Image (cartoon, rainbow, N blue to C red; front, side, top):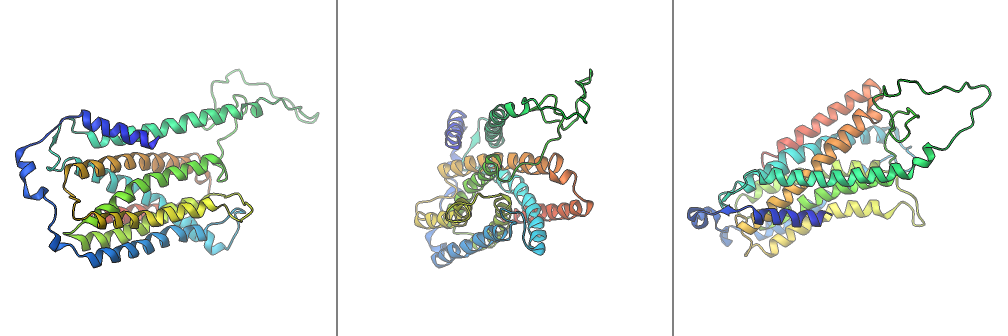
Length: 359
């Protein structure tokens, strides 16, 4: 599905005419950086530094997670609770202040030229978000129909319990009624962390992050001028982003198999840990031919950033904020937990938005 979306986005860019000017094509600012300004030793070191930062960020919340039984040390559970909502702020700020902003800047780069359709970046992000929404929507329809038989199974009332007939004004349903059963009037329950839907949501979230991470790795590996500032900012970027993703992975309940805890949890952590260093290694290998201001490179980065922005916007706003706060367990939790979660959320938003100044 994501591959199809990428192909469709590239087709859109091909269909949207980009008018080039001779000034942009011949501008010195569109030329590749000179090899003399490239510090190979520092670039190689960045592979290992970002490997450690990414690994520490994503593995820490998973190791601190409550586990399949939901129990564990009280201090660890409270710390994990804070990291979980700190991560929510990280993911939302990443979508707005990094991916969406970067895609706007990329498509407005003079080295691309003037696009015939100016809002290309938000259009691709919107398309990405709608595709993911459709997948979620039809998946929810399929799951509801699969469980419909359970809702319609008649139950025999006890002799002590009076049977209530449906109210004539059945159109006035509670706001949070479960639409699976028309007569159930049951409030929506929080998403089961062991369900396939919960696992799909986190895998979708990681997919958007991976799209973004591979591109920033390649760009950093090939970057010459201003490398030190970008490198320092990306260390914190990968650390905080890893905390956000790791908190979501750690919140899932993983079915135990013969080898212990499900291996997919660790595979997801490893994938995030190595994806940016792999991108840096690729960038180092192609830095002599890679032009960070080249048309093809800018189009590729812009498309992938826009796709990732759409995915993370949907995941952050719908699956994290709305699903957890409006209809999830945060709706009826204690005031102290709400205050703690709001502070953690705000700190995550602020931290990632601040880093956006240098990335």
